Amino acid sequence: MTVVEITDVRLFPLDPEVFVGGNLDAPTVAHHSPGYSVKFGGWVLARDTPIEKILVRDGNLPIANRSLDISRPDVTASFPDFADAMSGFEFDIDTLMVPEQFTLNLIILLEDERRFPFAEVVGRRASFHIPYTPHYSPISMLGLPRSGTTLLMRYLGAHPRVIHVPRYPYEMIGLNYWLHLFRVLTASADHQRSSHPNTFLKDEHFIGHHPHFTDVYDPVLAQWFREQYIPDIAALALRSLDGVYRAMAVAQDKMDAVWFAEKVSSVPSFGLQWTFYPRARSVFIVRDVRDQFCSHLAFSRKRDLFGFNYDQTSEREYFLKVYWRMMSNYHQWKQHPDSVHMLRYEDLILKPFETLTTMFGALGLDNDSSLIQKIHDVGEADPTELASHRTTESVAASIGRWKRELSREQIALFEEIFGDLLTEFGYEV
View 1 (tube, rainbow, N blue to C red):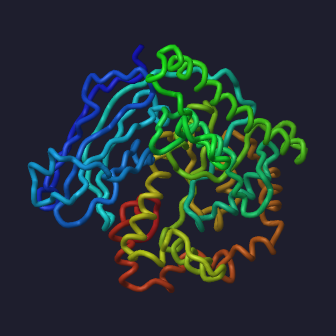
View 2: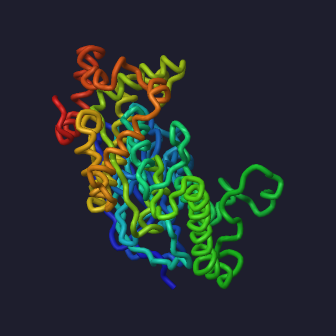
View 3: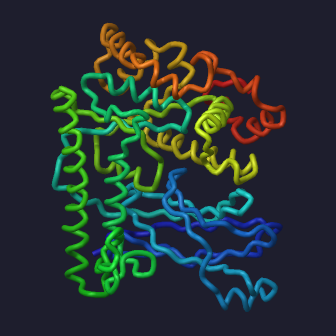
């Protein structure tokens, strides 16, 4: 039985000034896999700047990041001047993380954050039936830190049809947890990086891929894993999330609620949201990234911490990391335009009633004016909590702060990296 078929493989030419050469050896066109995992393998040699990772992306959604960790004697024989370089890679990709019709992009990431397209792999995988229909569906919040996600979560949780965990800063990650659990438990056995059949019982703190989910033992067992085990783990995840939010619905007296709201990250398992929840919705909140950066620095100083390793890298490298994280969220918006609603932080602050009315309408939720007034009042009801979160004297002062706080060099770097996105989102460049 064919579970995955590769229908096209395209290798992109590499810049000869940057690379010595490279090739994708696997998969090949017409490759058929009896399981959901597909083996990828090949090699790449760079001239001067070391290669950090091989990235695998579904659009801009990260699927895998892998190092060059295999010695290739055949490559060394052809390029003896690079005899000390690790040039090979080999890893499995779990196609349960991608749509049934998929296009995966392989990208070479250099240590200086430059990225180069390497290959494109097109294929299709078999669907699977989940023996459970969830009662609650997610409204997932996509946004960078310091972009208004905390305020927006307060508004979402104030709607009578939406449940959330009402604890500041609203970062209960049940959805991400259970989707990640599904990803780990249903991946094919990897005795080198994950659970080993001879040693997994010795580790009381972690569990990884099922060590017997492989064709090596018995084809009947492998078929059971694909046809029964995978759907059952999916049902476990959905049933558990329903249980959590059913308990929250009782506690919040929201027995008519059918949605739950969570902040999420565009990690490999996030794509499963669209497979598990046909009614899923997302809100993609954006903020002028220059203001977001100023807010992030001020909040870090306020809490005496630094995120994103800002203090451990150059500004260009830091901005590029933020850019690609934003692009993962952007990709979800573009790939699911009917299910992802985009709004701007600035509109939420300056035009809250209009912005909330439009958002709840786009989500298919009640949005009459009296309800929006109540939601707005609840969202603004705890000034002490919000004050601890702010980094300016007023919320209005947080808009356009980059003009006061950034150097000309920083502004130019933002425009170089984020210029097209800033323009598309309607910001001054």
